[in-house]
Image 1 (tube, rainbow, N blue to C red):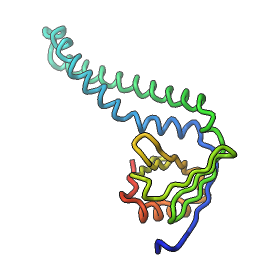
Image 2: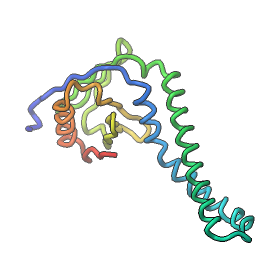
Image 3: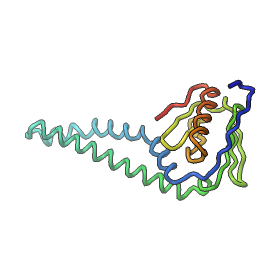
Image 4: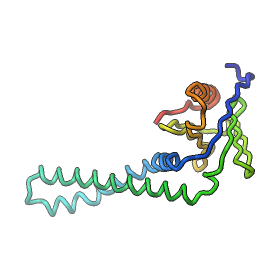
Length: 173
């Protein structure tokens, strides 16, 4: 596809609670690792001292169970946080219309705002199971749920346009 050619995709919809939960979970993955590492560094030595008289197999099993339970707790907590975030964000619940072309992405949020991003403004893109996340700074993103697209053909065309115009190709996570 030539960069002068302007294939356009028009998508629209409202962001669902599930999308916000998935995005929040994605952004929190570093927290999982930090908590796990911190827990292992600061909790293991005292627990090892407490269980010194017990067989090492028991100690190892206990630590594995403790780590899995803490990861489960944080995962539940982060999903709950995502739901709470969605309920408090009135802008996320408004319908948005997005036009994607070789020239960039234009997002209109019903009677609130219209923003145009050129592909050079976007520093990286990520594809999750149900959404695309395009970063135009490390704190600001454009979210495009896959349910906005009318067909898989449109999704493939979007990926093609994005990969041709982004500095770094979309990454699947």
